[in-house]
Image (cartoon, rainbow, N blue to C red; front, side, top):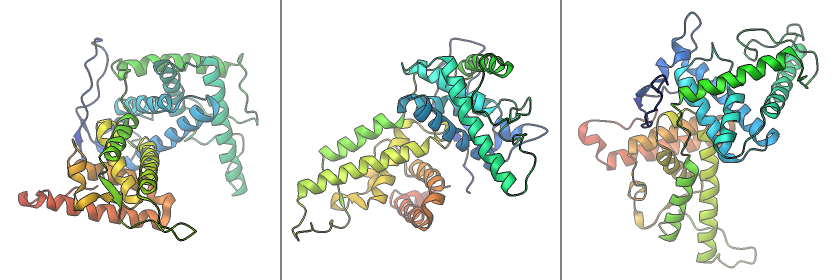
Length: 354
C-alpha cells in the first residue's frame, strides 16, 4: 500500500486548558506515537489496520448495540483517530478507548447512553469476537481456548474466556472497566483540546450534491437503457435517478473514509467533495458540456482530491475485487489527466496520488 505523504492538519481551535495536548502540526504516519513507540514499535500498515478494525468495532457497537445515530458514531470515530494521533496503541487498549469515545460522543451529540449500558454492550461484542477467534484457532490446531489473542487483550493483563458473554456488574472486571473508561473519557477531552464541535463530511456532501442537482451540471456518460416497454427514460426521471445514485454512493464513500485517518489530514468539506467525485466515477456520471471536475468542485486542489480519493479507494478495493481495482486505475488516470490540464507539469511536478 502506498505511503501517505506528510501534510498539514486542519486547524484546531486553541484550548483554554494549558495542559491539554494538541495535535501535531503535520500528519506523517511514520511519526505517529504507535510507530515510534519503543521497544515494540508498530509498522505504519499495522497502525492503519488497528484503526480500521477498531472503527468497525465502533460502528457495530454504536449502531447495533447502542442504537446511536450515525453522526454520534462518526464523532466517536473522530475522537478515536485524534486520540491515537497523540497516544500509542501499545499503552492504551483500543477497545477501552473506543468505549470512552462512544460514551463521550453520545453526550456530545445529545444522544447520551448510560455508562453501564456502554460497558456491558461493548464488552459483550468484544467477548463474542474473542470467542470466534478462539474457535477458529482451535479448528486450525491453535493454542488453548481459555486465553485470548494478545491483539485482542488489554495491554495490562491477559483476558481469559469462560464462554460467557455477560459481564457481572459486581465483578472486579466491571469495576476496573468502569474506572478505566471514566479516566479515558477525561484523557480524550484533554487530548482533543476540549474541542467537541466536530464537523463531518455528510453535511457538505449533501450541500454539494444539491447544488449540482439544482444547476444541472451532471449527466450520465452513456444514456440509461430503455424501459421494459421499449420507451426511452424521460429526462426528468434520468436526473432524479442520477442524483439519487450520486448521493447514495457518496454517502457510502464518506462512511468508508471514517476507517482511514483522513479526518486528521483534510477538512471535512474536502473529504465530502472527494466522495462526490468518486461516486460520480463509480456511477459513470460526468460534468455536462465537456467541463472538468475541478470547475465544479470549489475549494480543493487536484493534488488533495487525488490524495483523498486514492486513500479511500485503497481501503474499499480489496472487497470489490477486480471491479475495485479497475475503478482505482480509472480514477488514478483521470486524476493524472486533471493534474496535467491544471498546469501541474509546468512546474515539473507530477500529481501525488499515494
